[in-house]
Amino acid sequence: MEWDDLKHFLAVSRSGSLVKAARALKTSAATVGRRIAELERRLGARLFERKQTGYVLTESGEAIRLKAEEVEEAVLAVEREALGRDLRPSGKVRLAASDDIATHLIAPNLPDFQRRFPDIALELVVRMDLVNLTRREADIAVRGIRPAHGDFVVRRIGSWPCGLYAAKSYAAAHNLEPGLDDLSKIGIITWTEEYAHVRGGPWFAEHARGAAVALASDSARVHYAACKAGIGAAILPCRVADRDPDLVCLLPSARVLSVELWEVVHRDLVRTARARAVMDFLADLGRQLRTIILLLAQSLGCAGNLSSRSYFGPRRRLAEQHGAAAQPQETTFGVPDLVLI
Image (cartoon, rainbow, N blue to C red; front, side, top):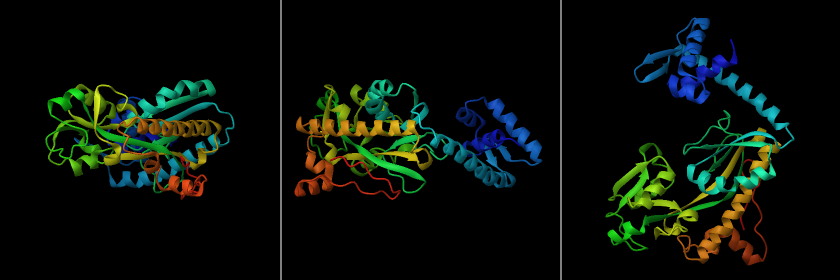
């Protein structure tokens, strides 16, 4: 039995579909199907029930899955160990981020990264759900939620303030003024049901219960484009929306939300030269983001109600009171946070 057989088996067991498994493995559904059939023949057991809803593990398949995951972890540990000994900043690094972070923060700064590290091939994985770093779906992730467990190194790289915006034409047509309190009469642009728990979804659920849903989409870029087109109001990143002459800020981030950004990497990869290069690149972006936020506050954009003192919170206030920089604190994983002060 080969590891590739088990890899195909695990992909189908997790997705419940030959097509989805093939997409994850970058092969064809027919190839995945042949691998599964061959594995069942070798083991002399039926591993999946073929149902209209997809592939469902049998009792034998569930037992094999547990053993296959142990093999997977051992193989991935060997790969991470080999990568961790790489001292040259070269090779492929998969970086995962949400589409707005990837589009508006990471991608515009890639030319400078490529000039500094021409031998690193950066792959930008754009998705709203969390990638599995243990399974090497990505090497590094920028997340809006700090992981509570796992063998990861985490570092805070900044914040992503978001306010409520509408196209100026939409605001004029509906007599909307900045600072509005009643959201029941506006149309909102929000997330599809599977992403209702992410960026701004819970805020809309609490503060705009009576509002009609003008559009639901699983893409932050679609939210922005639809808002700009005058479909309705959306929660958008202040960094971008405050610079758009076609948009008006209805509520500042102080009344909506500010997302903490964390870079997350598996502990086995943290000393790899190419991983360190990308991690430091992200930390630099965090410092740039802080400067931009302060400029937005000074220009009274949607981040304008956030003074530098209130925005960066108690760590900065403590530092100012004592005339010194606040000290980094240790994370639960034993790695210092990057404190933006």
